[in-house]
Image (cartoon, rainbow, N blue to C red):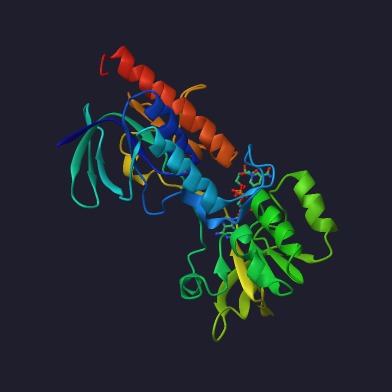
Length: 313
Ligand code: NDP
């Protein structure tokens, strides 16, 4: 069975930064890149807020650079998925999607988060044909068109504002009678003439011949004055939060009620010895590439310290 000193699961900014630090610390990290190598930023176009790129950088290019930087120092990056974990006893045991078994002295969980969907069958039907969970990735296709964004948090407001710069009209579909977003975002949304906020609305389904042409909405569902009607839209954007990819580890690693892995104090340590978490899988608040990268750095330094203290290197 392959014996790995530092297993990094996930290949977003957290995973790759952990790999850069771990390989430079000579602890021979192995990165399992997962189902979406490069993570969420590979579905983005321009990234303008990652320090070091005064002109901005394309998301996939940034992630490719991070991968190369990790590989330059000897990190092994595998385009494979960890499918099973057993953290009952050290060293911990894992299985990948080819059936290979491996054991690891330290583990960095950097599996990220995945956008949530409403669970409508039409979301599947029109995925890539008008349904998206990333305005910055797909907004470009909706120039001068009509779109809807679902959600009432900061992400939904940010997406609606971004889309208002491209689309001719943006509906913001909010299930409550108020927005949950920060005051400043709310103000920007209310001031924007292209955005119409539909409070107390839910989406029942989508329709269209060769892609989304509209949505079936219901206002005040279940109330005496419930009202059902359709709106014509070309694009339907979900912005109802993210689901952390922590399921594989939940039996051992403590999470909050949403599934975000809990880390201890100002460290990346989880409740399981030698198991660290970094990036969006343990961050319900910031969800930024640079924050993920920073936590990946911390996790790798802590893994190195653990190995050294336990004379495993
Ligand atoms: P939030 O959890 O804050 O908001 C999710 C929104 O989606 C809520 O309005 C929620 O409604 C709604 N929602 C959830 N499920 C459904 C559903 N099934 N049907 C309809 N609506 C639904 O997630 P965000 O992604 O917006 O934000 C996550 C964190 O990131 C927050 O802390 C936020 O402040 C932060 N953030 C900060 C930004 C910034 O500062 N620039 C930008 C983006 C995010 P309800 O209110 O009814 O629960």
